[in-house]
Image 1: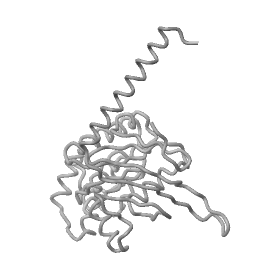
Image 2: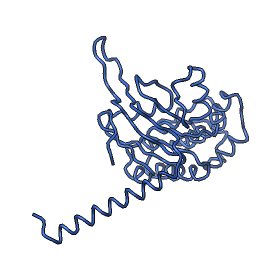
Image 3: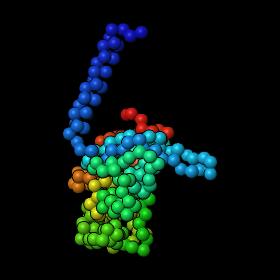
Image 4: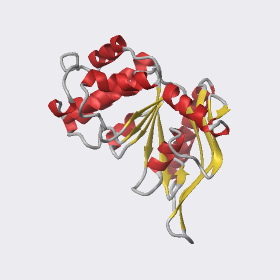
Amino acid sequence: MFNSEQLLISVLFKLFIYRIAIVKNILMSDKEILIEVTGLKKSYKVTSKNKLEVLKGINLKIYKEEIAAVIGKSGAGKSTLLHILGTLDRPDSGKVFFDGKNIFDQKEKQIAEFRSKMIGFIFQFHHLLPEFTAIENVMIASMIAGDPDREKAESLLTEVGLQDRINHKPSELSGGEAQRVAIARALINSPKLILADEPTGNLDSENADFVIELIFKLRRKYNQTFIIVTHNEEFSKKCDTIIKLHDGKTVDN
């Protein structure tokens, strides 16, 4: 049983948590929503008779200019969620609103144009094209969008600390340097949203720390929104929002 002192501490703690929640709601009310997800479900066919249900009704909001970490155990649906937010995959049901517009109401060509202009991707493995130099790899996304911009590519590589490596091919770069090229590539079209799937997962601690600080620096400079799947606990704690997935559903934090 609680004595009077324990009861007082318990009450004060609950009041403290309640006040934090109020302050958080006030702060959030001043922010604009970039992405709103409602009732998102996704399953994949395993056999002709069986399906694997991966997402089981996801609801979430991502605010403009915030960095959101998506965490959870393997198989929780993190990468599937990221692929749908990036329009690389379609949901079975549910809606994904971007700036108030339902993305998947559009035709495939419109979705592809939207993805090219509005979303940048960073993966765990940099996926650079080995036959191209660093600057050419960064320029590829702008070439696809029909607006190749060498000057901006150079500026971004300087921004990520690779001004002396712009003409080096991926085989001549370290893992950390290659990942920084991939970050510059994600930024070339000035997207509103950057999606990153384990961007530090293949790096040693020194390079991982550098990439983490770089992401926060770029957010401050370019006012972009980042959604990052990560197992890096220290990274997730620094983020504005933590979205925890468990068995295909979001868990309150």
